[in-house]
Image (cartoon, rainbow, N blue to C red; front, side, top):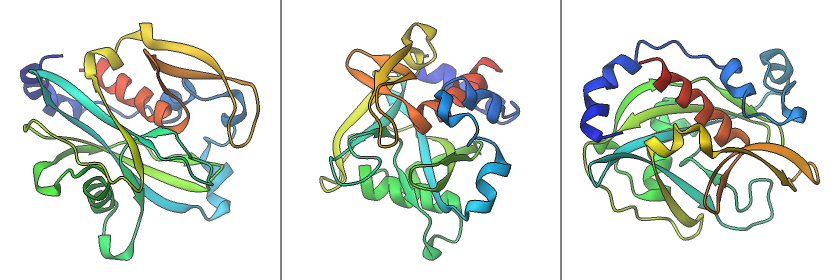
Length: 211
């Protein structure tokens, strides 16, 4: 999608209803489908986090940025995710959490970002986090500055690629909670996006279909 086309239609995105569970289920593995429901995780007192789904121009095309986390002793080691992290009291709002963490992890300055809308919350069972995504954009070209303590790789993908159903596949993966399971993924060359990030992307796709 040309970036100017995105700018022309971005306000329409605000009026598209969120599909939440319906969209998330399309990219959920079989063992995750129960945990998507609110009555599953509300009693678990989950930790709260926020992430930024960030759109920006690159070579006149609308792009989205992801990051691959470093390897570490934890359930999200080496996974591809959106920039974001845990809510802190200094943030005041979840939107501020998404912006603060995006700056710390990728150098995205908060004043560059315009938030279009919050997306549906999503629960991550292995880490007991309830994640609140925010869809935002910038009109500036970006050179990302990854925090080497947290980020091993910055991944930039055209929005048109993400919206193309040809990148939807199933892969057999080993996760922190299961071995050799079939997981729905977005696959672009060697980049495999799955789990909560893929489920959030699924809702983003549905929103763009609605404009």
